[in-house]
Length: 197
Length: 190
Image 1 (cartoon, rainbow over the protein chains, first blue to last red):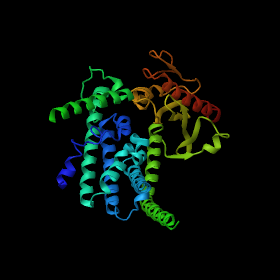
Image 2: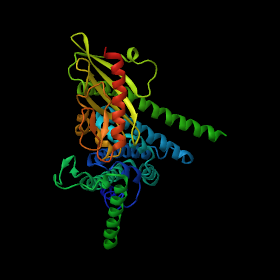
Image 3: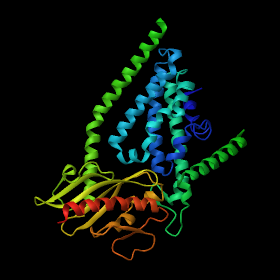
Image 4: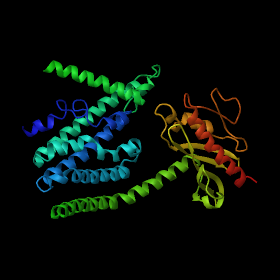
């Protein structure tokens, strides 16, 4: 597979959220506004990129029998750094995302990419894979939070779009709305994929 | 056996390097985070009591023992004399603790403003407590009377309109204000 292919596969064909259905916990919880979705996507991409680079570079050094604990330590270290950096430079976003930043450690996409890709491929391919998966996950979060924010709060990026007369369906930014939006998007993705194949 | 030691040492090295990396980033960000927390604290103090030259933490003077609700008492000084008091209170809301700042003016014996600074209430419902439309209701309340949450348009001076469908959150904020009010009445009103 070419490097470009490694990048593009994460965006639609193997989209981590809508096709691989990984990392759904933060996706359901934080997608109440586009701002949160974008911030979470960016933090996630940074961690995935850093961990993919380190893990692919060390793939011949890390003993096979303890690779999972090694990956966890590496990922946890990067997440803690991102957590500190976000606390220092983007306090509003840090507050909005709350516990979901430290929880990136156990985000199964990151461990999944380490296990399925970075420990079998070189640094270059792993960078492209991380960027593709990161952009794909971010796009998915933005799509989902966009739908939920417009329907549930009547705003997009905090800017009112529905007009004062329309009353937004509050349920869409509450937890049930997350499941409703997620289910509808998954159904649509399946329909499109069936058509394509 | 030798293999176990080898693996253990490897993990030790990985964890040690990770620790070094985190320590480095922590060293870079720690002063920024501390500065920012202080700044946001001072700016939210300004929001509940604007007219102050200096704000001093005098929790130990005015709070006897531990209080379940009041966390901090800051006194705002104007021209060297105490002019206002800012209480940091935390009460139980619907989704967890609701932390708010309550400001009082010593001369008029009224609240100046209330600001919810941290909450985990339901988005779109209780989370509206941070909005001015709710907290403005607590402005200029007579400190001698307990504030009361009402679901219809307030008719009396000590009443505050609840957030629609978030009575528990509204009451949590009011509880905090009342706890601060009692302390204010006993310490700052002669």
